[in-house]
Every structure is written in C-alpha cells, then in structure tokens.
Amino acid sequence: MQRFVAAHRITGRVAVAPALARLPWPDDMALDIGTTDGQALLAVSHARAGIAETGSLILWPDADEPRLMSLVPPLHIALLQADSIYETFAQAMHLQRWADGMPTNALLISGPSKTADIEQTLAYGIHGPRRLLVLILG
Image (tube, rainbow, N blue to C red; front, side, top):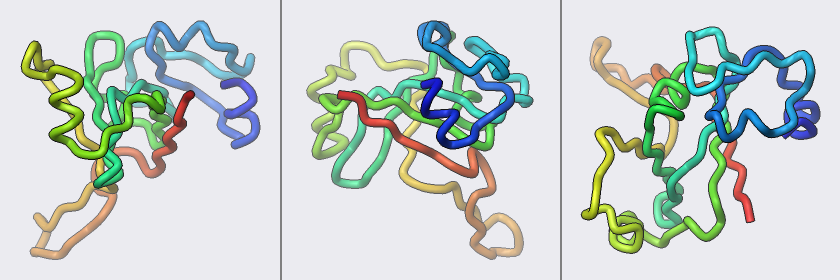
C-alpha cells in the first residue's frame, strides 16, 4: 500500500480498518483506524464481492469498517478478492449464503451517486467519494 499511495501522490489522513493498519503506510500519513471524522482524504476498505454483470461492488459495513468510510472521504479504495467476483447479484447472494445472516446494512456501489431532487434536474456525484479505485487482489 505504501508504494501505491506514493505512486498516486496521495497524502494526508487515511481511514482504514484495523486489519489494514498493519500494512506499511508512508510516514507522513495519519491513520484513522476504524472510523472517519470527516478529515480523512482517503478510505481503504474491503469489498465483500463484485458483480461482473453490472460492474458493482458489494460492501458489508461493520464496526471495523463503518459505512461512512466508503461515503465521506473524497477517495475510496476498495480491496476486492478476485475469487469474490460473481456473474450476477443472485449468484453472489446464493454462493455467499446471505440467507444465513444478513448485516444491518449492505451497500451496492454501481457508479456515481445521482439525484434529481433539485428542480427535477439530474445531478451526479452529490453523495460519496469523488474517486473510487478498486484493487483486485489475487
């Protein structure tokens, strides 16, 4: 991760899960472990799965990786295991046995946010990060 953030000239505060805090980070980067107070410029989280059909990511926020980590910082890096990419949403739900225990919150990321709340004019990028990078591990 240290080389990646250096190559992309990413500096400042980063919100990470406790498991990711063990990775080597640049000395000038401050880590917000398992939280974000709105000051982090980058968040790094795990994706539970990817859906090839739609290019979507599935995130299951929890106490270590709260929902705000993928929504507040302007840059979000999602780590996705290559063997967690499924053809369809239904296949992901079935093979990961979602019926055995759903989280209180699941996020599907399929593109930039959009809304038409203001004067019925469609606007993109209203909520969430300005950039999303997906690193496929594997």
